[in-house]
Length: 276
Ligand code: SF4
Image (cartoon, rainbow, N blue to C red; front, side):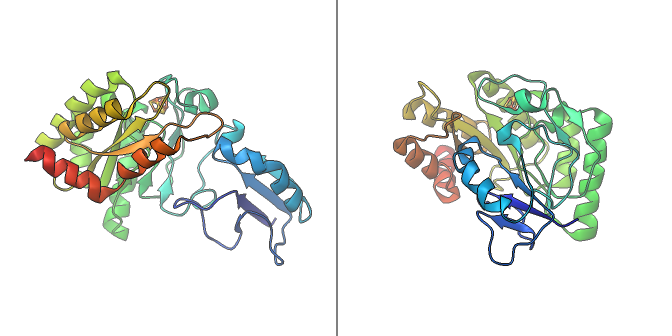
């Protein structure tokens, strides 16, 4: 059966094969079924139009995180570009701004497929057996295919244990992201920074990264900047992540702020200033 996958927008992570489309069909589109995948709730505004356009080609199915659909087993390359991998879904935490736990429920482990950029919601909440399996797969990716491993889904600092640090150190990932979303993330972040730096990670490599949530209700640029500096102080290169509610609306001032704190050259300069 020929299935076309449709994505409302192209991102770094969306597939680029000939059955992946962005927006409406072209003259050559031909399929038995069309699957439209919505990742972001704000893309749903154009959903009706997109469905109408594709219904002319084949029966349409709508899915994806934005429609509250829990993900199934991960199939490399289907809804994410090859290289991206999800080995578990869900999270035992209940962060107020996050939709993962509402959609996916508690963490559940999936069959481990190949990839080198790990996007799990909360890998460190998985069992030791699963984590070891994931690292074995990543070691193979590195050794056989020469891939540079990344953890861009975000690791939870509060769950980081010394044996995880050993696995991470031996893997020498290109980058691994933690998160500083709420005030109670700070202490675990500092402890994680200490563990990772004592294990041999360096600040200068910029491998230790941290998403810092900014622009949520009642946040101010001053306190957001203070949190970004706290992440630097904990040993991480921060990247601002702009809060977006259901509507996806963004304040232009906050957009400017976020852009600045997402530029590696600017953030690296801030880190050098902090070191001086
Ligand atoms: S720890 Fe991360 S994935 Fe889990 S609920 Fe909080 S923000 Fe969501």
